[in-house]
Image (cartoon, rainbow, N blue to C red; front, side):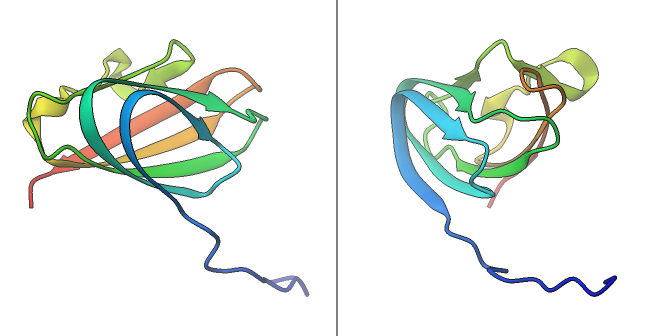
Length: 109
């Protein structure tokens, strides 16, 4: 709208098999992650107010649960119980250059 044009409507996707410690670049709009081992912990980079990113996360083994850094502030003030589902969509929004507001929706395929 407003005379603007949109390019790159299908941006590059970060795809990884994760175990250990990983940094999610919040300038990448979509991360496709499979949790491959434990422990798996996530933090973020390139935090700037207003940036948003989505993580599609598969947890094929119930014993391989992720954890997220202290910059993540979860909707409802509680990090999800990752063992409840095998797939998750995690929405991240940077509030002030340091705090990531996050919410997660789980489902089982």
